[in-house]
Image (cartoon, rainbow, N blue to C red; front, side):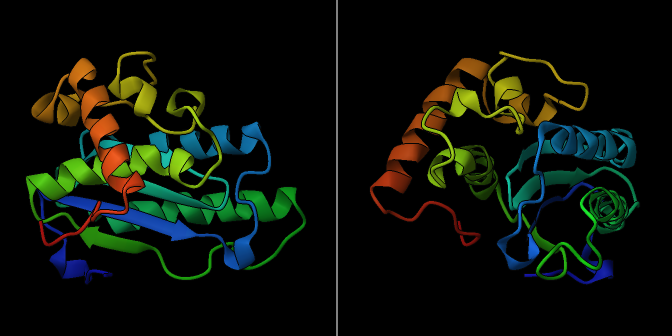
Length: 190
C-alpha cells in the first residue's frame, strides 16, 4: 500500500518496488543494470538512507530502505527512476513511462516481517525461474550479505543487526522451503 508523504518517518524501514509497463525488459543488457546501480549510489547516500537489501530483475525491482534522516526516500526513488527512464528511452528509442504505475512503497512493521522481506527480495530471481542457484544472480546484494562480494553500495548494518553471513544462508534456505511448500511467506501482519 502506497504511503502518503507525511507517513515516512526517520528510523523506519520501507519496501519499494515497481514493475515495467507491458512486461517490457527494464534492463536489456548488463550496462543497463550497471547504470541503474550508479544512480542508486548517487541518489541514496548512506548518510540519509540505509540500503538494507535490493534486487534488480529484468522487469521489476525491489528495495528495502531504512530512512535515516528527514529526507523522503520516495523522492530519491523518483530521481533514480526518472533519470533511468530518460536514459532507457534515449538508448532504446522509447518514450513515456517505462513503469506500469506509480512507485509502490510499504512500511515494514516489525522485525519478523523485515527478515522475511529480505529473504523474499533475495529469493526473487530463483522464485521467478530466472536462475536455479541464488549465487548466480549478481544484480542483488545477496552475495554481499553472505560475504562473497563487497559492492560500493552494500551496507552491512541491517545484516549485522539480524544475523551473520553464515546464518543468513540457513535462514534463506528455510524461507525457500516455506515458499516452496506454499505456506505463508511474507505478510506485513507478522
